[in-house]
Length: 193
Image 1: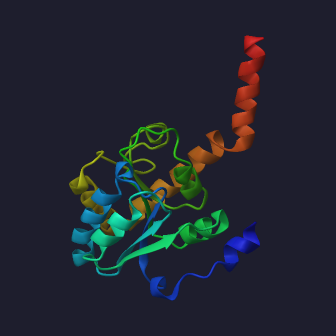
Image 2: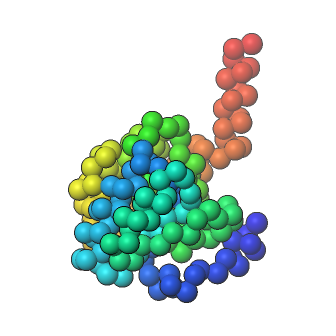
């Protein structure tokens, strides 16, 4: 619902900040600790950046404890889907540092739908969506220096981020919407009958 998305009020401490956003379960396998350590280096160079974690999970208390030593890190907990999408619209980057062997990350599809640039490992289905330097930035799994370099590159190359996000949006719209997926599924089912 677009009206709900537009009405999301950004917390005052995030207004006029460049938000690096993580959305997902807070688990070590999801790369959240590597992201936090990388961000601790990045924020010294770019003090207007903030890192926002949306979600919960078994390692949230451990991550919050580690984050006490890093400036500009915030935890918003679980949010409604409409609020997540609204927050994405106001963010600078989505970072998916997952080391987890998962399927296609829905969070990347959601980011693409609002033209949010994506940094991600190629784990699971992310490698099907992202082509490094064409529609996103791929990073090495479990490597905090790779995350640092990707964020640093993003800050220095805003025009490239715009290019990546437009390309990712086009790919998702042409190949990953429900209408397209259902048509592909039905056509494959008819072939096998």
